[in-house]
Length: 253
Image (cartoon, rainbow, N blue to C red; front, side, top):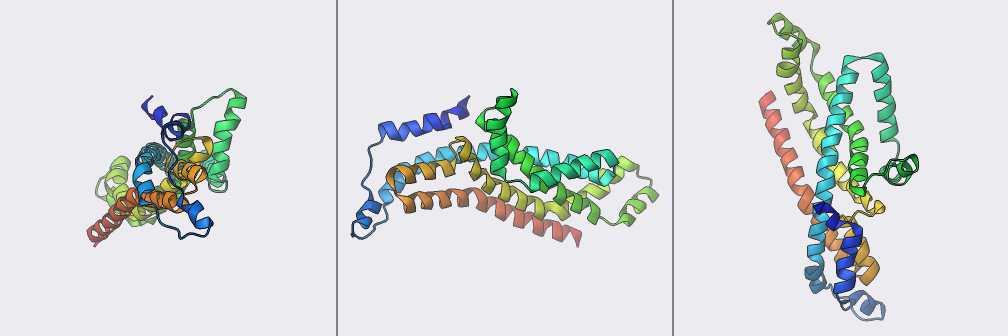
């Protein structure tokens, strides 16, 4: 699997065995000398953050897709008011939202093998993000569905629409426009939460930063590359969300 090439064993690898240790400006500053930001260090190790960014995007995309699917199902159940399923959904949402992602990942990665289920770190990260994000997506979508006035449904039925046509042509389009800001915020939240997956030995951007700081003590350079990487990933999503929100607002006028 191509993505395994970016797993911890193979990544830790590349720079510890083949890369000479650079001059440590942090240690120089600790000895009384002035601290000089090491741009050469940034240029040298930036490619490792590119690899980490691919891992972050990989688990984030699939985790968010799982969260959206889970959110749609849960929102539909809550809107339909099916008693038993609604209670199950409520329990899931409360457990998901009130337990840390780190604990969920530890359960998937370390707990499930004790029960006979051995999952890869990538799968655990995707399922963990999907489990956490599904509850937030469900609440955003439920709020959007419930924000559509009841008279819209009644008018659709008066025009001869059946239940499916009313849902797909009247209710859902309005609900999507209302819930879009919340969904975009949840997407950004989940991508930032993906930084926790480094705790189960996935070589994402956070793992790269912690490894560099632990080996070379170039804290500022590593944090600089970490911040830039997340900005490159998240800023386009934030801009897209703002554009969609304005577009939907214009369409509702």
